[in-house]
Image 1: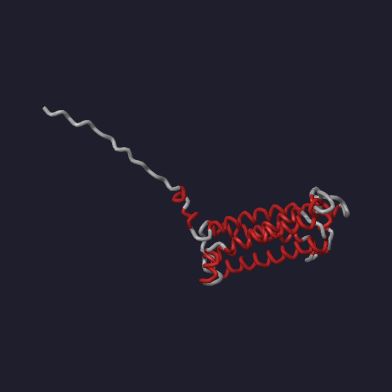
Image 2: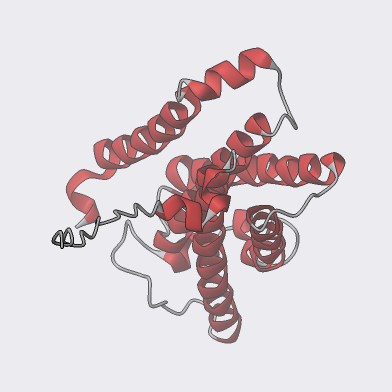
Length: 214
């Protein structure tokens, strides 16, 4: 009687792609939206702290704040300038209202919600206005007041992430721009612009204030 051939077991290798578990990571504009969400979180945190500080100053005019580091880094000095209350109340209150809205829109887009084109374009328009306002506030602080507010700078960084994140998403989703704009973003020139703005701001601060920051 012929001997039975021994049974062989073939090992099966299963390769699991982490991205396949989260298909939303492969959708166009996801990284841009994550950057915008991070910016929204930073902006909301900074707006919250600045709002508390504004209330403290209202109760104790001329008082010092927790973020008063030295003569150059002083939230209270900036907060008592007229530019800190452009609308008749602390600018941070606007951030407390606008940041949750922007975060909600970004999270909805990350979740795959199909929002109307006009709505997404309006959200991008809000990001543009926010970026312009942040640049103006930085100019006022840097050139006019000549004092920097740490939490205001945090808010500026958050606004920068929101603006470039929303812009990149809208370009990739075809909400704004055309083929040239898409090629511009595809080559990463938009990211280069964002990094350049941040590096330029840091360089200007170091050149102007230098050792006074310490």
